[in-house]
Length: 65
Image 1 (cartoon, rainbow, N blue to C red):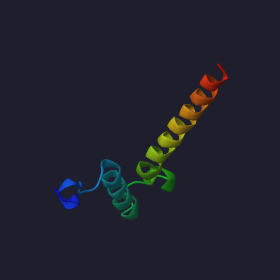
Image 2: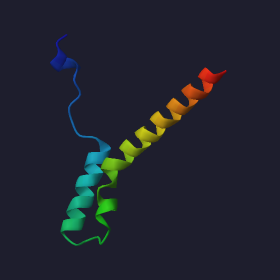
Image 3: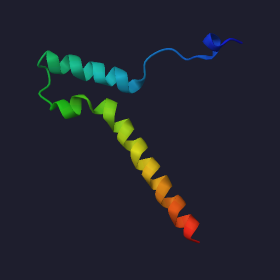
Image 4: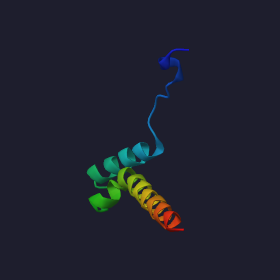
């Protein structure tokens, strides 16, 4: 199989939500802060950073024992 056959194309749920929120914000349908409009993009990154920090803390604690 070639690499093209193994690749997954398309956009994710976060991107779809962001686009919906963006359109609603630009058409003045919602009056949310831009932080909330862009939240589908940065919340998964924030969760990943928290998970990484948790893993590092656990690793440091386990090395002490």
